[in-house]
Length: 117
Image (tube, rainbow, N blue to C red; front, side):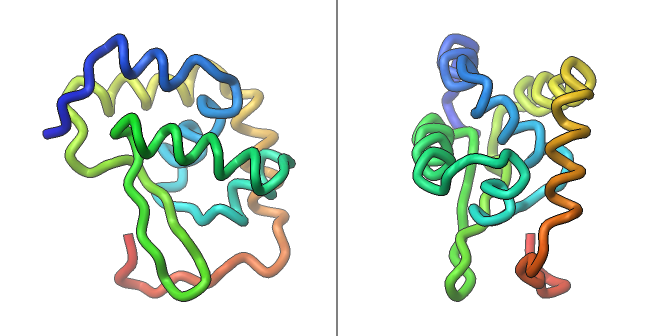
């Protein structure tokens, strides 16, 4: 398990964009940068900067598949973290709903092989 403390977790989530990214990843499982950019309607550099912070904090893992970089919650998060992150879906459902609608409406989403994730 990753040695993330509550203080480190809340510091990593102390930004609306990072919370929205985590909400989408909790909801969807795994998304690429282009999907997150479309869902949040933000620039790629801004999204990438926030993803890098979340990855360096230990919350996210990434993988490269061709030209795409996919992000997901780190599979070795401490047991107490995942249920807490799941509560973010409930706490701000209206924002998540709008982001999810933009994601579902995204054209040319990258295809995922059946064994990814």
